Each structure stands twice: as C-alpha cells, then as structure tokens.
Image (cartoon, rainbow, N blue to C red; front, side, top):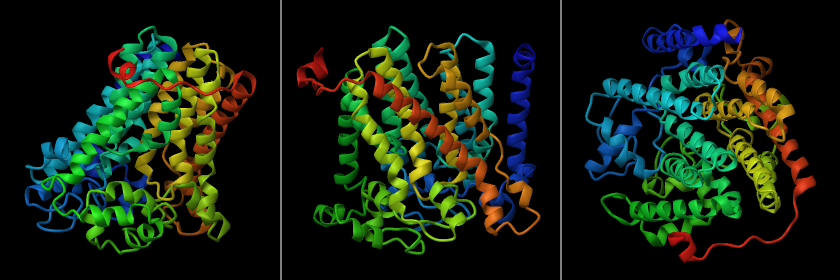
Length: 463
C-alpha cells in the first residue's frame, strides 16, 4: 500500500492540484462550499490587498478598503499588518484586478509547495514526504483559501517554520540554523497575521528560544512603530493623543471599531494603522452567526439555541498560557523542547476554539501541524502512542465539510448547521485535548519549579 502511494502519489497530487486550478475557473468543486454556490465570493478576500498599497499611493489609509477608486468587484476589509501592503501587496497592485488575483493564486500555491518541501526535508521516509505534499496541496481548506484569495499562505509557512525550528532544536544538532528558521517564522507571522502573540510567553520563558524571540520582537516593534509614526505610511493617523486615549479602553473599542456592528462603515479610528492590533479586541466578544463561520463558540451557540458567554471559550487560551509557565521547569532539555513543540501546536489551535469568527480557509493553518506530526512518526517522542490518533484527527480537517450532504435542503436548520461544521470543529477540539493531556502528564512527572534566568543585552546580541 505504501509503495503504491509513493509511486502514484506525485501524479495524484498533480492531478488534484490541476483539478483545483481548473475548478477556480469552471466551478466544479462549488458543490462543497456554501459561499461558492450561494454568494459571489471568489477573490473577495484578495482585492483589498493590492488596494491597500494603491491607497498609500493616493495618500489614503491602507485600511480604507472602500474609499477612493474601487479595485475589483467586491472586497472584505484589509486587516493584515500595514507592512504587508508595502512589502508584498505592492507586487500585485499594478495589474488588473482579476489578473492580479490569478497571479496571487499562483504565488500562494508556490508558498504551499515550498512549505511542503520545507517540512518534508526533515524526514527520510518517501512515504511521509509524499503524504506531506498531499496534505498541504490537496486539502479542501487549501482550495477554499485559493478561491477566496485570502493572503493566508504566508501564515501557513510561518507556522511551519516555527514548528520546524523547534523540532530542529529538539532533534538536530544545529541550533544556529534552527533559530534562524524560528526567527523567520516569527517575523512572517508578525508582519501578516500575528497568531504568534500567544506563543510569546513560552518562547520567552524557554532558554533555547528566548534570544531569538526577543530579537523578533525588537524588529517587529521597530517596523510597527515606523508604520504608526511616519505620515506617508499612516496617512490617516488619528494622532498619538487619541490613540493612547482608546488603546486600553476596551469597551470603546468593542463598541466603535467592530466592522460588523458598524455595518462595514469605517470611522476615523478604523483608518489608523493601529486598527490592525485593535481589531483583535474589537471582535473579541462578538459572534457572527453565519453559515460560513466555523468557530467553536458559534458551533456551541447554534446547538444550544442561546448565546453562551464568549469568556467561556477563552478557557483554552488561559490553559495554554498557564502551561506556558510550566514548560521551562522541565529539566530534561529534550523533553522540555518536545513539550514546547506540543504547546505551540496547542496554542495555534486555540484560535479555532476561542476566537468567535473563524472562516473555513483558516483551517489551512492546521495543515503544517498535521505534517509536522507526520514527521514526528520517525522520532522517539514521549507521546508516540497517541501520534496516530493525533494525525488521523487532523486528517479529517483535510476533507470537505458536510455542506454537500445538506445542500439540497434547508441548510439553515440547527441540525444542518451542526452537520456542516462538525467535521471542522470537533477534530480541532479532540486534537487540542490530546495535546493537552500529553502535556499535563509530562509536566506532572518531570517539571521542577524554579525561576529561569533572562539574558543580558551583551549575551543577547554578541554571544
């Protein structure tokens, strides 16, 4: 069976990728997605990306998606780091909207290919290498990411680099290269979508990753500051006084900067570059009850028929942060780094469990997690007896949602909505629980608590 997969795998993967690309034009896979059949959403997440750079050229905020000259037929709101529009979006800004979209699709696909190759280099098994390419390129979340044109592929690469960097620190005797990869992963995430923010406590606490994390934070802070204070980069700034006034006024942010509550009308605060960070607060408690939202909070609220407090769903975040302060006290270095790798996986999953608005394409960021778990099959990890269960659980996410089962009927009923979301939400819940159970067990048996030492500036930059 394995030998057959190795032989036909590359041809099968190539055929599926070709099918995906052709389906973007002919719509053959539309039956698996509500948005493709019942709404015009192809490229909807993309057109704001090149528009953000064109806005800067006009002296307009990168976040003023619907202001000025229209670019493309429709668009969601640009929310990536303002640096992304200068350093990446600018490459695609001078083409017609649909040509630009197709070029970006190829760009995203190449990133996914590179990510598969990057992870695959860390296993000698040809079967695993083939499986990794299959997962990264043939999963349904990958197709939907390409369909809506979201700039999510760089984040997928970032997470793969972070995981592989820690894997190399654990098993390969090349800490310098491992930390370079970790630094690159952190920076790519920082300057696209900052999912790594919740990872920072544990990365700062663990000696082997502390210096690299501090360096990434210094670079991130410096560049971000430039995009706040330089007028040409933040042309519709609200000014430091207003920014400081609202920065910690969470009630004001939630009431005035939520794009859905505002009916997609942008006020001055939402055109300042600080909205990239403040939006995380603005939407922290808001639940969008939409068929295409696949978060655990919306899943549970739909089943319960009532709104459960958003605070309940923050428990995975609190648990992950608590464990972050336990990992550094595991004395065995290899066991500590293995636990760190697991905790980073758990933290990456908290987005789907705790954040209220999760779209289907965002499940593509679980694909590198699955691939790294596949690589770990060759390693003597302390959770080896659960690896197969973790991999199998993750692979369910690669399959289509069950929308196609109910598409011919009333898919707005509780049973239909639950069925549509169940193969996305429940595998993430189960995978998170498997990871946490293993972490709690190793911490219980091996953690010995004492405060870690932080590096001096001299050690940080010159040792």
